Image 1 (cartoon, rainbow, N blue to C red):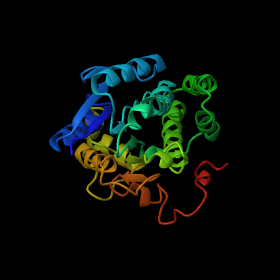
Image 2: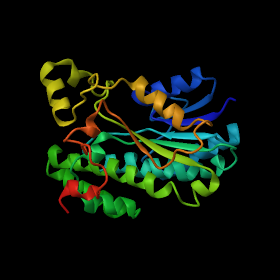
Image 3: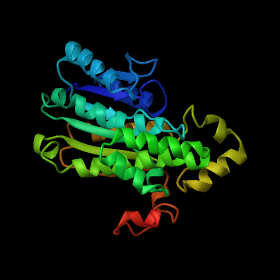
Amino acid sequence: MSRIVVVTGAGSGIGKSTAEVLREQGHTVVGVDLKGADLDVDLSDPDAIARMVEQISETHGHVDAVVANAGTQSNTSLDLKVNYFGAVDTIKALAPLLAKSDNPRVAVTASGASLQPTDYSLVELLLAGDREKAVAYGDKLAESGPQVGYTNYSASKRAIATWVRKMAPTEEFAGRGIAINAVAPGVVETPMTKELLASEEGRKLALGTMPAPLNGPVKPESIAHTLAFTVSAENRSMTGQILYVDGGFDSTEQGRGADIWHEPRHIDNV
């Protein structure tokens, strides 16, 4: 049966591939991006998200699934605004339209960066929903340069993965039949990484911090097919999962290794 699926970040990379896979499966896709999609929306702006939902409601009346894929890696507070708040705000704003579906589903694109060292104080501000303090904190990190500023990215991805797990068993989601999962890519072949991966030096740099022992950098299509399953009607029981589609990074010593049955905050030495 054809479903209506909202895909953010649909203008390129993983989002574009996901939209293509879903359309090939016969579904109606509402692609969202800053430009080059069905709806041009700045997901760092809550008011723009509200207008987007109004448009979708007027056109379709309901949605069956949301793939909150849009993301940035600017090493500034923009990462917090888009990767965390943009995803959460989009999902919550579309919840009334999801509630009209017989099989509502949500998927989020997290990242293998969620396993990297980060600033847990910033993660806690994000999870508390304190946008003003989180952005101010992120701005201070960015002032110290891109290496420290990268914490904005890793914290945004840790926070969104944590939020997915927190929300999954709640009345708001499980109680309404909404399965919510995240897919966490490692190094992906996208327009954003094309130049980096083109050189041997760049490839070693990327895979040195996030190794992919199985087949190297991941192709967007692999992630797209995983996202497509998580938001399908056939996915009736899987929820709250972070699916690492990363060529094996999660299972290496630089990820979580073989032992995943412990408190993840050990990564940050807190």
